[in-house]
Image (cartoon, rainbow over all chains, first blue to last red; front, side, top):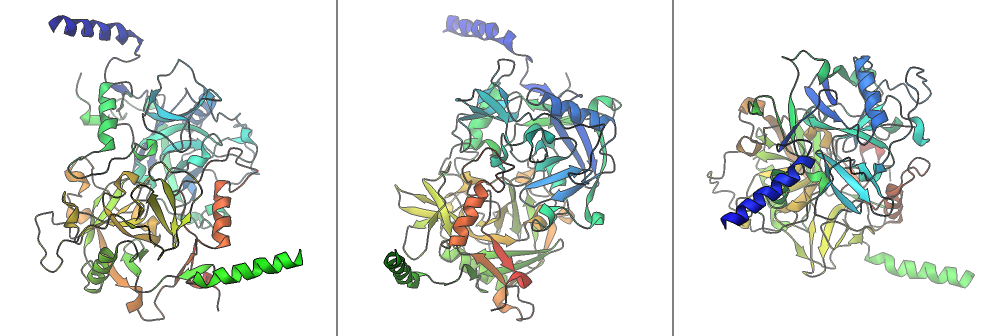
Length: 286
Length: 286
């Protein structure tokens, strides 16, 4: 028995070096952590350079140029999306921010650790997580992509796929998965969805939900990259590593959080939960 | 050709009488229409006596006794549910409102018109609509039930299934479909989800999301049955009939609302849209 235990410990040790981070928790990189302050509260967003490098870089640059400060969420459709930016319409040209080539999906590569959910999906051949982001895969195409779960950060565009620039949106209702691979998802909200839910809504029947009275549009007060903030003010966020045993247990627990209460057990729905995270004082001292 | 056309017209005429309402739109019965006024705005809810007669009758009686007036949404978990009522905990006994027998599902009967969605589902053998309510079916059990889509009205309970009484909840995030057939759904929000989204949230890690500071709980100002309101003040709502051609076209359009924009087409997700409705001045004069 003891020998067996030692053998197992060695086997685990041999596997460990392929992991980028040793612990069950990953610190979100300050250069990917967007801090968006709204009147209702603070929204924290993680950018994904692995799935949409051009869009992540663009958003980072927009934030650093203070592009979004004082702009607004001008198109908010209850149960669907909140769209923010300048909101001046498709005809407005911004020479500083030329249209981006679409990044709807990417190749299935070994540079990322995809961990399968272990439940079927209505839209993708396979779903799972990469660094806490919900991800879909197609066997046929050998492609993978970030999903339109609630809180996804994605780029609006015109009919031409390669026209994203500055206007972003975030799903605020049931996951609009039909948007998967039709638009570029390049991040996700880690914390503060409740403040986006408080945004004033537009009428979906009028101008695609654009709020006609500009005074009713909620302002985006200030947006910063966490890396640029003074250390004392910089938020710290850790996301549970999907390759960890803790994450595997978390998913199993999600299937039936309380067996004494729930008698029927269902598959896991990839968009019905978020990867666990911990912030600020909940992060244990090293 | 002409004969064939006439034969088809006659066949349709022969089928028509089984329909309960001739038009594409159904007026929501005032005895099923709940009018819930919150500080943020008005929420309209339709009760379903066909799927949960005991729970619908209980809710109607609670409304008419003014039970909910001045109570609150005291347990609000972002992305999951908003729970309202007295919020005094499981130990509080209310002799006037004894525990109800669960109504998790019902038999598949010919008293309702089930219209299949025509897309697969992750949780049920088959999904579709009955009178605008999203519904699941099990072939094996020959049962059907109302789904936990966003806006479902359902009854909270203790571990024992037959313990619902007065405390209700409404999903406010991605559909928590794992609750299907584990709790009794007995209605759905027709309008005003955006006001429920503005509710103050609790911390899901503290007391299951119960808002600890009572002053932060949003009040339920007043709840009435539309049938009891003066005619001039009574809201009028019509829901599109799922058996109509218009509803069939609406579902097809939902699969790809803009072919020039969306290049990839997905199955319909039963919880990603609501049956169309029209209200007030949008209802044409007869």
